[in-house]
Amino acid sequence: MNPSDKPRAPRNRTLTLSASAQETLARQLLREPLPAGVAALTGRIICGDFIGLLPQLPRAFVDLLILDPPYNLTKRFGAESFCERTLAEYEEWFEDWFVRVLPLLKPTASLYVCGDWKSSAAVHRVLDRRVLVRNRITWEREKGRGAKSNWKNASEDIWFATVSNDYCFNVEAVKLKRRVIAPYRENGQPKDWEDGPDGQFRLTHPSNLWTDLTVPFWSMPENTDHPTQKPEKLIAKLLLASSREGDFVLDPFLGSGTTAAVASKLKRRFLGIEIDEKFACLAARRVELAQDNPSIQGYASGVFWERNTLNLQPKSAVPADTEELQLALGETPQPYRASKAKTK
Image (cartoon, rainbow, N blue to C red; front, top):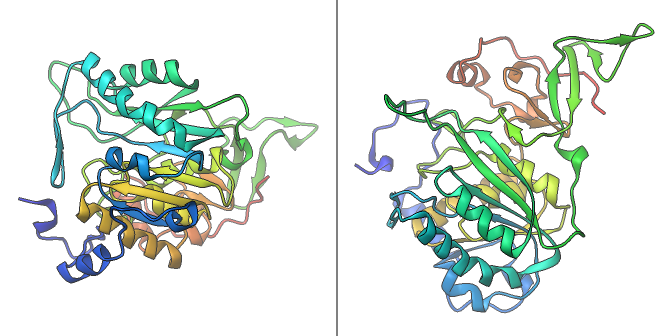
């Protein structure tokens, strides 16, 4: 059964489209032949195979590239599917189209490439030959099936690279607000942390190990039926760290549209490409919704918040059904209080 055909619980907030809504949104999608010029592509979603579309795209127009290609797994994505292959074959497949994407990037561009343990090594080898690899982020996916004869697979990688040594990185924009476990004082005053009405917090520098993310699920309005949807909070970290307002973000494996929605919320220009029409329409709808609600779960007042702080976050970042979301996250429900603590 298609996930979208399953009966939904009354409080299920998964975004779905009626047949008529999908038909309307489908007419808004760009298709071949593409219009010429960056302006005509800005804020648009293309339905098509991006590899075939590459010759029609402008040169050197992208500030930030987000790549979330199929991992080296046999998996179905709507009407499309990907078949597992050897690591060498996956590396060859990845490099074949990756080298054709590079001319789209500005000399100052950055890029992030998602992968899992089966594809990450191949991705790294290709990147190391073609661009400057800066770091590997590992994030806890949380979900995953248990195994009797292996470790549960609950993490993914994101490779951070740049075209040159001239690139953007906004460390202040991606600090994480954490509770202070051992508050240290100097001359009676908090050192490197703040004592506010909602508790003791410290703004910490972002590391390459992310454990503060929640994979979208049924009670989150960003959730869709896409099988490998990334959290908006994750994409927000990438965009805030490696782009500025007005910069151009390209995502050629757009999926359900997380990059497009977050780019819209954070005032970045974007272009998304998705081969499956249903997911492309979902992406278009999420961009529409982002115009009315620019909040990103877990990001507020210019900082990212750690888990178990929903009741302390500013109201703009907290869903209306906070208690329901807390229960689903395994947190102890507490009454909501808008945070008045200062942030640096």
